[in-house]
Length: 462
Image (cartoon, rainbow, N blue to C red; front, side, top):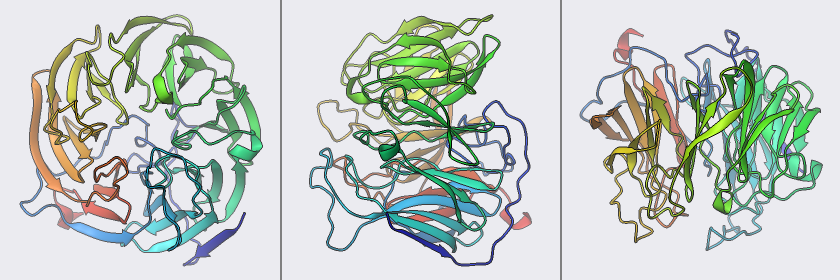
């Protein structure tokens, strides 16, 4: 494998405030966005002083930086932005039918940008031939902690970098190390850091979940077997007096001891096409998962021990005739006994936690038509990020929306268009990458550029 590394400035010091958390042994300050779904891995943006509505001509774009293709969202820590992408040569072409696996040479890159102006501080690139379906680029969000950056590429290249200089600290090639093939849609589950364990969804016999030492890359434990590993990020929740690592693969929802890999409990849940994607969500003693074809399942944690029981499941096994919530990419949000999420054809829905009863649905956020007889709206998507008493929704059309989600309905407060949809693989042009929110700004990317958008209520006084 060929590596190319560029360091464009002198080494700098990444400043971060460390705090204990159930997901990390240490975390950066709450104003950062250091991993998938933010500082606490829950899709909540906790900064205050954010605009109530967008200006008539949209919020100011502080900078734009050209990048290559990818579904991976950025991570932001202090004054640095980390994002991954993919480049192909002028003579190389992705398959005409993106659902089919091809063999396309190219390179994956990790870019470290200055958060103030978008300039490239360092970059690392390596040869990476894609064999996956939808080969636009990397899928997982970089993870930044204690001066290190961890990245996982679409073909299983797992890196640990020095966050300041981009120096490679350690590297694992998961396909080679575990004698496996890439999942159909690539390695897509954003890694989780817990103490000294970097936990990844890998695949193979007894290695669906693998913990690596964060400082050396040495395997600490491996666990679980499944025909396909799925794409859902690992999550850690406190329940039954235990910290439980939730691994949702296409055959079951599983709970493990995050430090040893010991399996606490398993609840069978067969998911078609390996489509376990959305992150498992906990609310109180409830654990919720949702899939595109089979719909949702709600489990109830035991209050006194590390076990869980089935509370309810969806009644439909079709993405066209859905009764509750059949999500594909977007992770739902749970609050006050209600679940808000995007269904299979772009329907933003509200359902109850106790039974999954549908309260309302709206197509306004995704801009879908609701035509389930056409592929035009199939997989129509919007990501949900909570800030205060409202939500910021980033939809696949490149729009950012401010809205309130309550049992009474969907109330759109403001909307602006920020990014050109550039990915045409699903049969229409889309933006399918999760944004980051930090420094009272939004960081969003498509397959051509990453932008920084000002969202402070009074930016001049910052």
